[in-house]
Length: 113
Length: 113
Image (cartoon, rainbow over all chains, first blue to last red; front, top):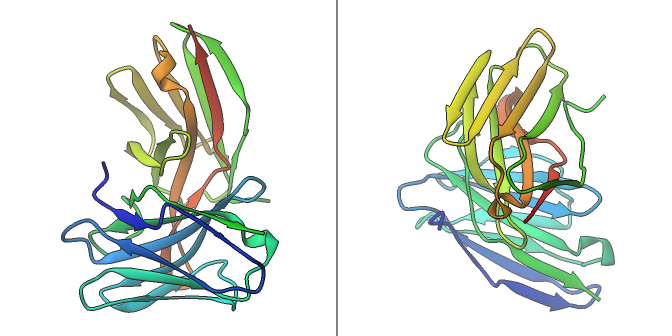
């Protein structure tokens, strides 16, 4: 158990809808990272937050957004969903700003029908 | 050219075999190298972390870095069915003013009894 929790485990929704994925980092970790993992694209970095502030952006679509709250939990919002957004979404956390040692949550499996 | 290249496999070996998993990278400035293990339907977990060239051993696992060839390897001795997972190499990279972790595509390993 990495100490990172994610909810929900599974999400099934329809195209055009909006969903919110939630992540709680390990105790004491200030950085939260979001990744998308699909069969054809592998593990793709989406965005990083550090202590409530956005610090880095990767291959995140404009339809996606995230935030980190004062209690350090984070939410990833996905809107106007398309079939191609079906994937595993992972949250990871680390103690500092450096991206090296990250601890991953169990993931949320999103299926868009 | 991708920053990190990894053969996705799959790789199937008998129990007890020595397994060699490999990645190549493009930037000679990379200094830190990691291996993550991901079981089916789980998040990646950090397995090994090495700095610069040379070998690092942890039980049945050995991580090797050859900076002259820009080649990193993970060896698994006396492989067990419980080693069946996807193994991802990862390299932290500083780009565009921030750190990010670049993952290889992952090699799927199956160890059969």
